[in-house]
Length: 366
Ligand code: PMP
Image 1 (tube, rainbow, N blue to C red):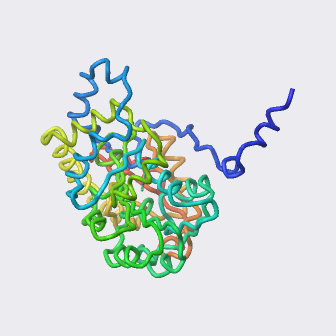
Image 2 (image 1 turned 30 degrees about the vertical axis):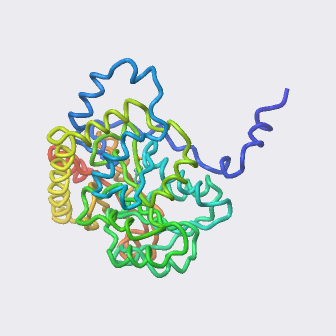
Image 3 (image 1 turned 90 degrees about the horizontal axis):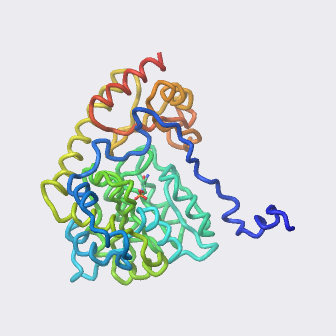
């Protein structure tokens, strides 16, 4: 019999080279590691899931989540009449992946800032793309000229950016959208916590696709739904690369209920985003008073550069609080060079969770 090692050798080298994402993150009583909505999920979604009829399980969903398209366009204040279309996906990961696959042939370049969302270099390699990382500026803004000068087929921007939580300036976004050669993929996963959104730019650009998610402010990470909006000619292409039936019927129903209802749906989402913003600002101030130097945040998490990030995160985990630690962040950025490229990323939630986290952080960093 042929050994399985030989069969593994048949796998595409781009796939073999990728790490399998660890599913063994320790479970902690207080989990501040993934920037989800720590207040929970909107009541409108919970109601739909509780009352779902049998056919929501026994029948296929719509092919491309068409029933969601109008509701999504209404939420982002755009209109099909202006030539804007929607592509949904199994999380926005799926939309990002499908966009890369739709436009990037193996060997094509994709450019993004560094640091940015950790899935981007992975998805790029999975799709055979050539990833080019350009460090953020010292002010944590996108280095728009260098990004454009990379002359890539696909340009990825993340506003606000993960893991820095920093906004991207309107000037940088507009420069990239105006001057990039190929597709601009703008990820607004955390836009509900940010001072401004750029999604309206899709009306004026033939190359811009804006990706968003129901996993963060909307509190629906477990349902796995994300979307992209852009010129309908582009979203239709991304749909072809994505394939059919990627959003389950239950997820489609729950998201539609949230977008269609006010008090229990989008108003719930907006009210909890306001709470997160308030707690985030209070957390940044409190961390500063405790001797840390957090990066000003425009999202629902805070990056705290510290040389001891790995050690602190491990000790916090042992005391029941999970935060993300990063090492190897780009040393070109002064605030990160000072800690040798190490930082903690802490999710923002109800203040009692923040207090638990702060006291554990004080304990382990004393
Ligand atoms: N974009 C960014 C910037 C993110 O941080 C994340 C999740 N961590 C995603 C996209 C993907 O989210 P999802 O697939 O749950 O929609």
